[in-house]
Image 1: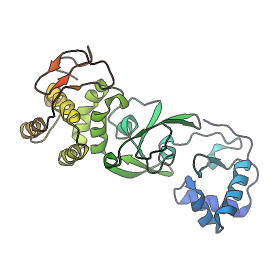
Image 2: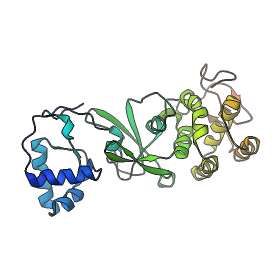
Image 3: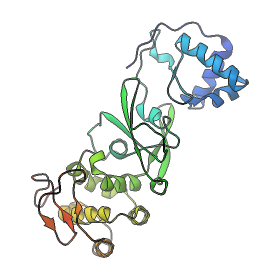
Image 4: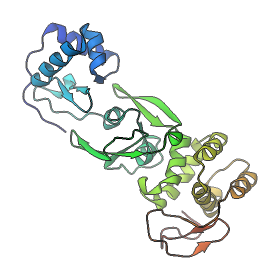
Length: 278
């Protein structure tokens, strides 16, 4: 929730430009977008946007990106803007990912306090706060930035990892999805939503033995509650792709606990995964 000073009266030409942007679903826009609608050059657009900011009709986000303050905000400009829309515009390219994507796909009712996004952008702050919302950007290698889709949220568009990439990312970085216990809990729901052939192709693209180890172990541990087509063949296919060494079930936690030799994975979380249930 944000509060600004009372908004000033908006000139007709500027009101029209903002109305067109809003009608096109671009509540978050760049200087070039505004210049095209207002039919002016970038220098003039910057001056007009400065005027709009002073009047309380737009907010500056980052790197020449602006947010339209919606009319329903009221005269004091108090509103809550969909944080996923903002996240998709704070880095270029970027995609809503990890725990935020899990919640978007309805795999968990847990609402993360931080909005997670993924980006291959090199020069990028890991965290930032915009309009009172905390954003965390996780930088990945360009080869691991794939599997994204566009969706409409409210009056804006977001870029988000698709269901299959969201699950692969959760197995790669469970610490960014509430922890391995949270991932295990959502797996039965996610398993009914993903395309398993596409998931297998994504696993190959990621090139991580640790992901196969976590997925294989959890699939066998959860049992029939996790629907996997061609279950036996698929599990053995994952097993054939195991790399040497033992991976941590919960990365970024101490390497202690027993080792599951079949999946070459160290169960370094005590009391989280109980026998016969996630």
